Image (cartoon, rainbow, N blue to C red):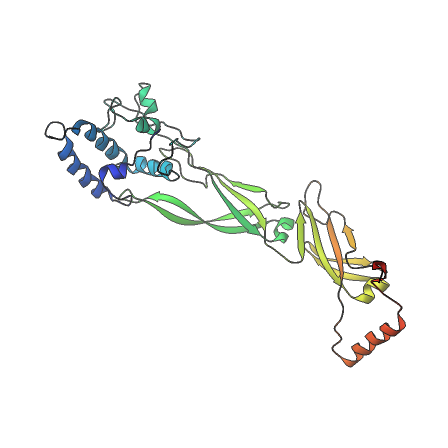
Length: 313
């Protein structure tokens, strides 16, 4: 189906006011009205002008037209959105300037299908489009739950019939145990409906703010924990900060960098809860004092240790 550019037909900009649309229509009506026009295609042109004016002069129908035309590109075959409820219905003789026999396929598909069935109502209704967005939260929010404020933009129609965008802030409850990639549905926070139709919904996709300490896989959390050489060699009990709070952890003697310690059910809550894995990383103290250098020199002399021996060196 061919898309009809009603703004082009009337010769007005998409930001035109209601008065500008009225003036443009009257000017074209004087030019193409069959009773007075000498133009060879006056009747056809007048039908197009009436159809364009019928839509653009009504704020509600204009907003609906602007909505379905947002994603259209010239040359494409136009089809209404899948959730479009074409429900403008004719009453009496039809709309103010459009007779059902004169309406284009484009107009009939968007606004006149019910009229073609002979119904006698002037009601139009369409559900608003769903919106999708991403919300970034801290990993700790998934452990305890949280409330976050987000700013939304929604279309509205001003007194002149022009569509504009307005902002409003809503509070979003982050449920405990939420996972990365999970969607939170906010009913009625998508595009507004038309003719009393329900608004669409907003779907927020959860993402965790990047943190060098943590890596998340589903509900399991991996945390890198630095330990001293003596803690790793001799064993120790250390305190570790985790997303759910500080915990005491026992480091087994003779631990190496990369050793993985599992804390069961300390991952993201759920049914079942994930696990927390602590990845040990040996941190060497700097040899930036004389005493530190002497300790390293003593180890070099006293410890017969070659970490490259297994490499054949």
